[in-house]
Length: 405
Image (cartoon, rainbow, N blue to C red):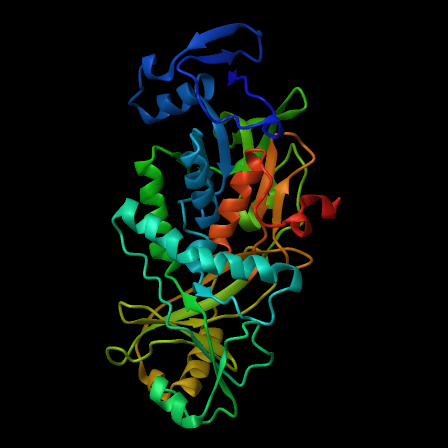
């Protein structure tokens, strides 16, 4: 059964009336229901059957990473009833594996993406403040900046600073003095795991529902528009569907597909030799270092075309550890805490896919590649505007799904 709802481009569809009109797709019988009058099932299996047969949502979001969670929160602010459908556990894929660098000045950012990346960086403090306030959890946003050693490009930020050896030693005494060129860039970092945990807690607080443990296999279509999603276990009815499935976004049948692919990245974390060992993000030849406030230092990362293989390789991890020791010699003896691999969602042109698809009611927000954490606030902002039929605050025409037709 599904609730009748206007096309998203005809105006906001998220202010739910006191009584909702539900329509049976099979018999076309109109019923009047009010959700609060319906008994809540307590058994998990029965709840899934009940939801599939009776309950509807304004928006179903495929993917419970930080992109999907933040978009769900933004839509919920406008009164939307939101369901997130996650293949595994929320926040345990690319969001869990990311380093969390907020690299707005990176010259390797595609030119079409640069203004959006810088805008998202500016949105971060308020974005984090709201999540911390609602969840009661610390996200560990650090804005000390980044030190770039022997970089292979010019900073995109005009207010960068070239550092003398004396200045570099004063900022970070732990670094080796072998760099020929050192610069300070106004960047930052955030702990993606803490960020995702806070977003997940905020989502539950706002009564955003989450169905996890089964991937979406098909977009359901009724009368030429998206009407819900089908998983391996059940189906969920929704007026709007948004694909935020990351590297898996192109594997869903029944609707336009996208050329996303997994790009593997291996990383490790060390326990810092002492308190305040490293304050800034450091990017240098062979590795980058990202400090956390709890004493961890993250080291990354590889770029591998390896399909959906998330296994780590001991020699690769050892090579990253050695590259980190070349930058900060004391890290050579630091104890390794963890090693892992994640799958970034890549696209052929290294640009994200954002906006409405050719199927009415079906939208996409994926393909963020190495910038998913950085682009989270602005993605939530512009996609909420697009889904609600408003003009996006930033131009996202370069990221339209139509470019892959």
